Length: 415
Image 1 (cartoon, rainbow, N blue to C red):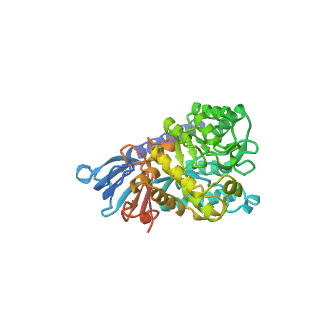
Image 2: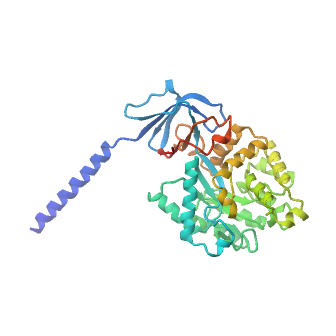
Image 3: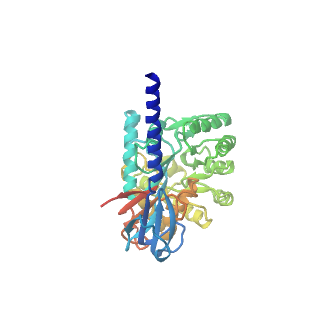
């Protein structure tokens, strides 16, 4: 009797496996064709009218003039005639886990921070921003969001977090929930290893570090195959202008902000290929609200013009720049709109509208070290894109209001 039961059980299991295998074999790949739109592909190339973008599963299969693209008979065809197709935008500098006020630091919880971060992510999704780099937040909310996305519990934008901001005792960020204070090259190296172990694939360090500490962190990050960025000087400098120079000499991949520095530091950045995320719009808000420390304004001569001049000098040197918001505290309420304010500010400071779009797309992907996957609409890239109802090269006012957003081939429509 027992042998008969085992035999029947085996037959049931085998039948079930065969059925699953059969279903998997007959399951059709998802194919979507966006037809007739004007393409701005993120590379800086001129727009191309009447284009078809063919998407298979989560990747772009083909892009080109509609007359030259063969659309499979079983594809879902979406007519986007009279509309513009752009890559999804990337915010290279955000703090999703921060509360909206200084007082909230004393009452905030990881649970609330997780929900708040997800809300901001979903707001970004509705605006066409499909990826962000979080450069310092409490780690548990970020770990929860990464795990939830991997397990299919969260359907939102791509999250690329650094984990804790790694600083020094008494350095920029020390004491904040979302920062880790360490000292000496070996502790910097260990902190990078800890962030990697926790699942983070980006690193951010903050002054006042030594050259030896920066080199140790950079060496460890690059050994692990992950990019590393640094807070760019500012009020954390022990001597004005030195910290950004130390970070660049130490080999970081990117500098956050454009704070007080000498022109020779920009020259070094250009020579080394160091990227920059200037976060101009939030600085303008800080000056308007008179929230820049008095010591910087009165004794070191800080003014908005200083940052604007550095921006123009960086652009003259062809330093690759990305779009980042860095809206923290009360300025978090300006998200996600301040992202597009930043793009407009780039144009005010001399970039063309197309350059600003490249900064938001291709350059952002390069800064994330994901240029093989994101940032442009090209065959083989992940299908992260947005459909706009108007021409962004005529007016940036159409930005932030996409009719449709696609992340990894999945369609999100907004009416």
